[in-house]
Amino acid sequence: MFGKKVVNVVDDRVDWSAGARGALWGPIIAISTVGEVNMTSVNTMVDNVKAEIGTGRKMDILRVADHGNRDGLELGDDWITPVNFATYAPKLGELRNYFNNNGVAHFLNCLVGNNTGLLHQFAVTWNVTVYGGTGLTNGFRVNGGEWVSVTPGGTITRNVSWPD
Amino acid sequence: MLKKLGHWAFLASLGLTLLFGIGVGLSLLVGSNAHPVLDVVVFALTLGFVYLQPLLVALALVADHTRPSKVVVCGLLFGSWLLVIAAGWWITG
Image 1 (tube, rainbow over the protein chains, first blue to last red):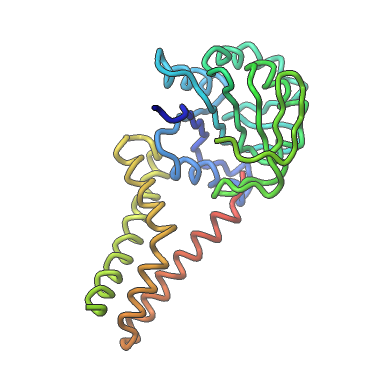
Image 2 (image 1 turned 45 degrees about the vertical axis):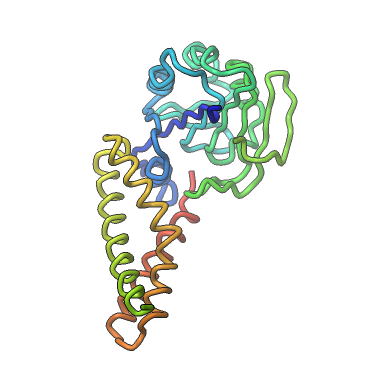
């Protein structure tokens, strides 16, 4: 009867630290998304997503849009890597009960699909399958590589389709 | 009939470009979801610009390409569309 509950969370600020090519990516994703949730840090991401869900339907898809590379990914001003993940895990873990059964998290952040260790940490923390792209994600959300999924059990599947 | 349609397509293309520019400018200034109406309107303008702009320009040109000034404006409108599409592909996260 109802479609899937998708929550898009975006850092929509112009970010010159990402270089000329990345500065406007967040605003472009925000402009081409309806009803997105904004974030400026891990804390605001988690709090704003929780506020968006409230007591309503849980998420089928959490779609995150911020910058990334092979070492880690950005959530607002926070840069998350496998090394410092534990610092953010308690706050991120607050979202665990906001996912539906068979819910997924989808990172649009560039290159994070190469870092399956980090994706696995997210998968375990949220108990959902997590997706990331191995290439750069452009303004049309096309990833130059392939989408990779990682389950909480550690199963890695390459060249999967866009989770929808 | 075709000429009239082309005229409206030309005006629609001009209006779409102008509104898209204003919408994107406003979104950059205040955030695209600062207001739910702005969020939806800018989303619709973006979809319209990306998918309709070349069709409107083509229709305007097919209907009437006898006036050089109109051809130049159509060229600029199409160029602005190309620029936006190229930027969308080039800009990455």
